[in-house]
Image (cartoon, rainbow, N blue to C red; front, side, top):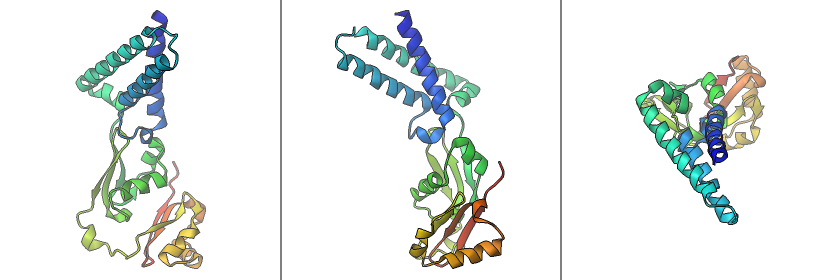
Length: 217
C-alpha cells in the first residue's frame, strides 16, 4: 500500500512539473493540475478494466489520492498567490499594439504558426489589429482588438498570408495575394534585411506588408 501511495504521489507531481516545463500550449483548456488528474485517473481506471486479475484497490487508492491532491492544490493556491504562480504560472502578454513579444514566445514555446492560428481563431488576420494578446494560464490566447482598427487599417479583400516564417520562405502563398518573389526581394532590399533574420513577413492582397525582425534572445 505504501508503495502505491509513493508511486502515485511521485507521478502526480512529476507529470505536473513536466507540463509546466513543456509550456502552456500543451494544456488546451486545462490547468496543469486538472490535466494531470484527468490523465492519471483515466489511465488508472483502464488498468483495472484491462487487467481484472489485479486487486481493485490498485486503482481505487491512487484515484482517491489524486482527488485529494487536486482539492489540496486548489485550496492552497487560492490562499497563496505565490504558490498559484508556481503551480499554474501567470498570464503573459505575447502581442502588444501589434508587436510580438519574442521573449514570451520563447518562454512559452509558442511558434509563429501557433500565434497566427490563435489570433485567426478570433477573426483577426492583421497583427496591427491586435491591441493586446494574452496567453492565459490554461494555454488559451485572449485577444483584445485595437478599437480604432476598423478606421485606421486599410484592409484588403484578401487577408495577409505568411510569406516568411522564422527565416524560412513560404513563397507558395504568394499566388494567394497576387504577389511575386521579385516583390519580396524589393521589400527585403528596402528594409535592408536578410531572409534568415526575419521572424515573420506577411503580405495582403493590396501588397501591404508587415515585417517582424528576429530579436537576439
